[in-house]
Amino acid sequence: MTADAHPELRRLRDQLRAILDAMVDFGSAKLAAKPPILDSSISLDGEATEEFHSHQDAVHGLRALRDDVKRDLDGLEKFLENPASASMPAPSTNAPYLISVWNEVLHASPPIVTIWRTFSDAPQPASIPRRGSRKPPGVKVDVVADGGKRWMRVNTTKNSRLLAEFREIDSYMTGSEDESDEEERPSLAPKEFDNSILRAGRALLEAAQGNPLPGNGGAPSVTLRLTRLDPSPANPRDYDPRIAQTIQQLRDMGIEVELGERESTCLPQRSSASSRRLEPTHRVNLDLSLLIALVSDITHSPLPSSPAEADVRYVPSEQYREWKRQRSGSAKTSDEEADGSEPQRNGNGIGEHSRALANQALQEMARGLLHEIRDRLATACGSSDALEGVEFWTTPEARDRCLRIVLSKIGGPKEKQRAQALFASPDQPRAEAEAAYWEHSRYPRGFLPVVPIRVFESSTPPEDFSVTALPGGKRIFSPFFALLAKTCRNVLAQGTVPPPRLPPTHCPVKLRAVRGSDSADDVGSGDGSQLENGESEEIERAAVLKANPRLTEHTVQSMLWGAASGWTTLTANKSSVKTILREIRASEGGYGWFTEEEQSGLDGEEDGVITEAAAIWVVDPRSLAEGMRSDYQP
Image (spheres, rainbow, N blue to C red):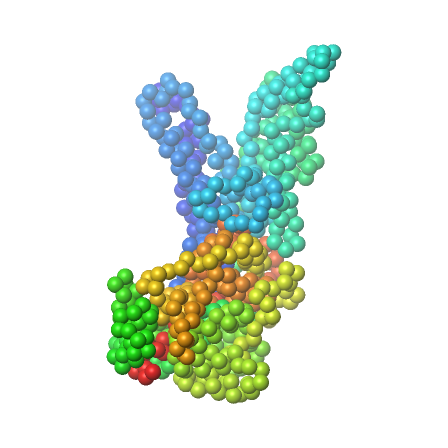
């Protein structure tokens, strides 16, 4: 009968069905490590966002495994549903391999980093794979588990296939003996005992040596599961002592060899992931976007009394527009458009940017940026009265770009005053700089110890730069810091390319400065900017990286300094954070993790929550806006 035909295929079909059902729950299990990113950004309704964590739960590579399981299941079901299948030969299927891989996933030591990843088996130039590019040759690993410390590979080679290899080798050996008295010629006979299983084992070991764990973690251990290779088969025709010799040589290499299928009846119990609370470090690294936010009119001005007032606050007055027209010397020049005097036909006009600034003002009404920074740091310091030990740092490039942007025509007088106070000269008394910074702010003097902002000694930390102490208090120093620093160094090492030069009417400098983008890299970095003295001077656009043109050099330099120092990097540049996370995941397969031994040694608080240092702290942007106010008097 048709229902009784192909019992083995039906068993495989049932197993694939069960695997698909199990993947639904497994995919939502929090087995993959999340990046330690503190997300303080909010939506316009005042709700916190989860952009950096909501999509991180599933194990990387699980979707590809699920797709292959479904593809094979569909093929088996289509065949078995065919009434004529009983008289047809069984089709080939990859089900035994897929089932074995799934069993390894279930039994793997958490956290599982990735499923089905190809590692280079030879040194490669520092580069990040691009989507759609041809993948370099390498060694496939089925499961990377135990926080990257263990690689597992499933091999479904049967005795019959290995015996066929042996027969081929024997034929070469016999041919060599027959031709020993004849004229010497090249021989195909192997110089030493070898076969496909041994070659696969050596490739795995070489790839493991070439892909060590971050820091001084050494090479991952390698486990090779031979599901269908039997050194002592029941059928004598399947026996060859060289099968046992192969297994022993693998073990002599240092590979852990496991034979046969895992028992799927007894699945391991998963412990729930430890709860954690992210806190910033006492020393905070600021990128360009935060320097701009710290001087922004939106950050410091009295709050609008209503959303309606926020809407009209940042619509420049007619007097301001007339002043700009007179200054440019023409009523219809590209400079006029660049200053936001007239709406752009391409949609980048003043109305759009006024709405963007109004939206930022609404976010400020929901949660003040300086309030958010102070409250988080106060919690980290354990005191609401004083922020003892808190320091703010930045890179030389971020400081220089901030000053060029703000001190050009883009910044208003009060914004310029704040920028100069943040980076006051050594000769200026600190009290005087503090007074200048807070003079026109709605906050009291010294509300946040941002004056002065300290500057790193170089654009990037030295290669041998390392953190010798954990960042303040009981906060845990995540391995993510090391991966972030490594990725930043890799993409910076590939150099930069000039940014694409935009036409003046495409994205004018003034409008880019106020449109409220979450990337500050292009703030004020456009063409044709005029300085206060009336001279035409271009603010050079930020150089972008060859590895990924979505990243600017100074942004990655800022991230590198924070990661290498073990300090939290505070940024309003969401797009760059998302991009660097993709780079880390592509190059490292995950975001770093604590091993079970390390987690067991962590001291949680009374509620069992572990306090972990945030590597990146994301807030909403605050753009330069003083010159766009409706009450602005030039």
